[in-house]
Length: 262
Ligand SMILES: C[S@@+](CC[C@H](N)C(=O)[O-])C[C@H]1O[C@@H](n2cnc3c(N)ncnc32)[C@H](O)[C@@H]1O
Image 1: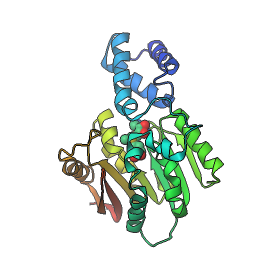
Image 2 (image 1 turned 45 degrees about the vertical axis):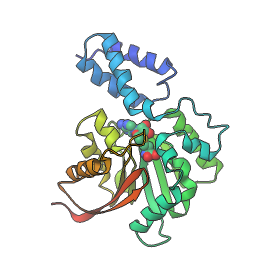
Image 3 (image 1 turned 90 degrees about the horizontal axis):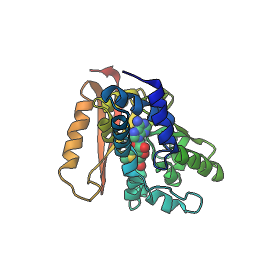
Image 4 (image 1 turned 180 degrees about the vertical axis):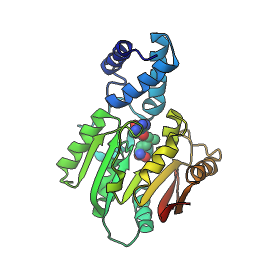
């Protein structure tokens, strides 16, 4: 049964703790309320909330990134996903935009669960009419907006949003980036990847990616597993797609076909 006083106490402790004080409040509230329904004792509930938060947030983050003193390259290196792309960012965007369409065309882009990817803006800013990104990290959100302002990227902006809690206006965009996110989201709640991909596909194109190597560098058939996973998510959606392979990531550019559902 839900217990608002107990939930508020756990929320306060998490917000005061160094480790998760930077997580968007909507996300903390969602996880606390899920665990309150699943477990009885306060200690048990909090232990499982922290476990979940580690899965979705802590595992990818280097604690306390010193944004103010680091250069862009070092910021990109402090998040696993962006660090891995450092060797091929130019090729990464070059190939994605080549699949999207005409050379030089500008797009309205939504980068969902963006992590620190917005700091790679210099690699693709010429292709942007409008760019909005969101994630659940409060400090990163502030720093991303500061980075946009300081670099005169006036058509770029960032906000805190949880893909499982907030309604996101994907239909206002031409392209949605969902880089390395669906597998992470599915671990939070079974069935959520499908829901989020279907929501995103109100936009004409969604660019999804999955890791092709584990964090330790092993391959273990990941490309095939995630490719099958994506096929299942897309089973009732009429679409065409192109796959691009990069050293540590497989990218799928998914075009929704007119007529929508099969
Ligand atoms: C593997 S990282 C990928 C980051 C970025 N898209 C990239 O590829 O560089 C997954 C990201 O999903 C974010 N995330 C996890 N659960 C989320 C949720 N429910 N809503 C929004 N973002 C979420 C995490 O904070 C993390 O930044």
